[in-house]
Length: 177
Length: 246
Image (cartoon, rainbow over all chains, first blue to last red; front, side, top):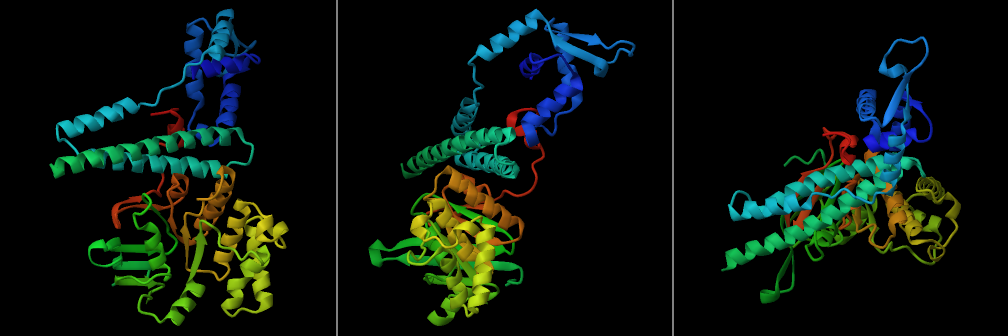
């Protein structure tokens, strides 16, 4: 979030409410829950870190919503570094994988049941993402983002299928011998 | 048995293939109730019996044991003739391979079941043009199936399935032969029909199709192993999908 707000300021100095409106536009229905307060908190942190400066407009009381924020040279460097960065958030598959193994080893829960519960949850999320995507007009930026969300969920659902097959087989082997 | 609110209902449904040692239970003691207006998806690996189940519900096959009710009427004991009439009036079918008549235009394919159900030529034509418009193919009404893309053919098949205002639409892998863009077109149409209250039973292994449904049943070896309600709002909201919150 900090990096995204900084990068938006690279275009021109802005009021917090203007940044909020731009974020909402890019995220579409995914950004509906974002409030302006989050933007001001982020801007205050960036200001303390010396990455942005907030200038009060003349003759107005000192309130965050009156300030115009601009990048400092350090902020510009950080934006350039962020754009060049190829880090990618890792979905936390290892944790779920270990959960199944631990549940089976300690006989705490049936791994196949855990997989089924997880699949229900992901399908509900996929349904949500898909309905939102279908409601977006063609060519909308938020539609593109929702497509990415749906593709990831589908990949995770396929992995859960593989988990179910593997753990069902493990079950059969225990029962069989 | 309460059949008033159910569009489709099955009790103790069994279908076996083969004899003696090689006897296989394709559907094994399945109970199911699909209320009107529900979109139900059935998922499972190939050979789990999901297509057979769909054929039983639509009266395309007869069960070895158990009962099938459509619109409050038991159908597994009907004569062939009455069964055919029931299928025409109450059930719309959508198949993976479209099953359009290649010699007929898109409009004629949609009109055909209406004419078979005894509607006048004019009524059938009016209804077909309305439905082709609804699936976005008004401009292709005179085209032959061979002149249409896979996605367009499936949309014609959906219009055809709806022509007699069926109580339930039964779809067997409706996106199985379609690319991503065509799949989305079909999902968009299904979503519109679902919000308009159309009852569906869809057999699929495409999780995108399943995610359109209100309810999802998982099938293994002829039996239901999971029954999940997908409808109902999520407490976290859409922002949760991209980690904006919680």
